[in-house]
Structure formats: structure tokens, C-alpha cells
Image (tube, rainbow, N blue to C red):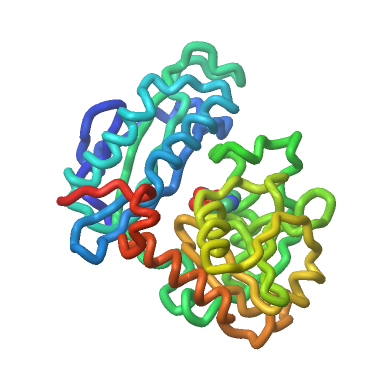
Length: 306
Ligand code: PMP
């Protein structure tokens, strides 16, 4: 990965290599930490913008609430710190990773009064699944790992420990020669991928799983709104893997993956086995918003210059 100069650490900027924690950091042992993934882009007017900053920071705080962690900063302060981190590092375009974790103190499962610490790192990061994937689409395999049951892990929180399931599934998919894992929920319905929400298109109707076992993706919500603007019917409804096999098109959405077409699932071509026209239209609409080319969604952009 490409390092930047500084990381925001509990209110202070520290050099990248000095942003360190004690080995008895509670989160390192038990996984109760919360994080966000946010992107910023260079816009058409050569200024930069963070996409849906307030929504991401709000989700960070909701994730913390679910995990009974009290972040000792306001949401406004974290938003401001994120923009400062981009400016200090002169990062016009890239990925932002805020993380709130339980620091060192007692070592039992109950963290008692251990400090709640926060870092914000940012670095350049191109297309998560590869630049070619955005155009050609990716190959996906249904995972042998089941997505979290809603009463085992709290799926609305972006909790560090939730991602053990994602790491297992991702590594399995890659080792088997695929680009990403498709995860089914505990009842066998299509849920999401390791770090993306999923959509299918059939006869011009766009379908995505409802907010059950999935993370409430901020990109997912944006896509639903933009697809509606384009005149497509969008429904939130459970579907099975065989319904996905029969789709005309399918794609993933996520901050890191943006809008990535799915060209194959479990060795079956989806539609024509390439990016479909609806996926392309949605993708273009999404990138227009990110680049500040759709004034209607200027409200989703936090502008800054470096
Ligand atoms: N599901 C999971 C499990 C994720 O990790 C992510 C990435 N945050 C998403 C969906 C997509 O969410 P968003 O669009 O908010 O990045």
C-alpha cells in the first residue's frame, strides 16, 4: 500500500510509522472495534470531494452505539478531522479509514474503563477489484461460509470482528480462482459479498436484498436513488442463488468496489457474460455524482482543496 505522511490519532497528527498501539489493546484480542471506509475523488473542477462524509461518520457512531462504545468526539469533529487528514497528506483522491477501538487496560472480555481511541488514516487506492473489473466484470463464487445470522453478530455495525467471516470467504474465493465471494444468509438467501452489497437486474427491474443480514451500504442507498432517477424500478426483496443465475445482469456496490459488474457466478455466465446496459447506466450515473457532475447530488459531496 502507498503510505501517506500522517495519521490522525486521538486528536493529534502523528507520522505514519509512529501510529502504534500496545499489544494488549483490547480490540486486538476480542475484535470489538468499529470502522468506516470512505472515498474522496477529484472533481471535474479540479477541487476534491469526500462522498457522503456525514453519512459515513453517522454510521461509525451508530456502529459504536451498537457495540456500547462511547466515542469521545462529536460527529462534526470527526468529519472535520477527516478533511484535515486529507489536507495534511495533500490527498486529492483516495480512501479514508477511520477506526475506533478499545485500548489497553483490563484484559477480560468486559473492557470496563479501557480508553476508546480513534484513528483516521488515508491513502491513494485505485479500483478495489481492479480497473479492468469495472468494465469487464468479475467472477464470483458462492461461499462455503454463511453470512452472519442477525442475532449472532450485529450486522448493521461495521464491527472489526464481523470481518473474520469476510476474510475467510474472500481468501477461499481467491484461492479457488474467483475475484469475490457471494455470501448467503443463514436461511440460504443471497445476502452480500465480503465488502459489497449485491444487485440483480431482470427484465429492467433492479432487485437487492432487504436490510436483514446485510450492512446498510451507503453506496447501495445511493444506487437505489440514482437508478430510480434513471427510471428503473428498484425493489428490496429476498432472492435465491438460482434467481441470480437467471438474472440478465448483476453487480456489486460498495465504497471500495464502487459499481462492479458481475459477469459470472459459480461458473455460470450472467446474461451475456459482460457488463450489461443497466449496470453501465447506473455506474455512469454514480461516477458522475462522485466527480461533482450532477448538481442534484452536490449535497452528497464535502468539498475541499489541498
Ligand atoms: N457490505 C459489507 C459487508 C461491507 O463491508 C461494505 C463496505 N463498507 C458494504 C456492504 C458496502 O457498504 P458501503 O456502500 O457503505 O461502502
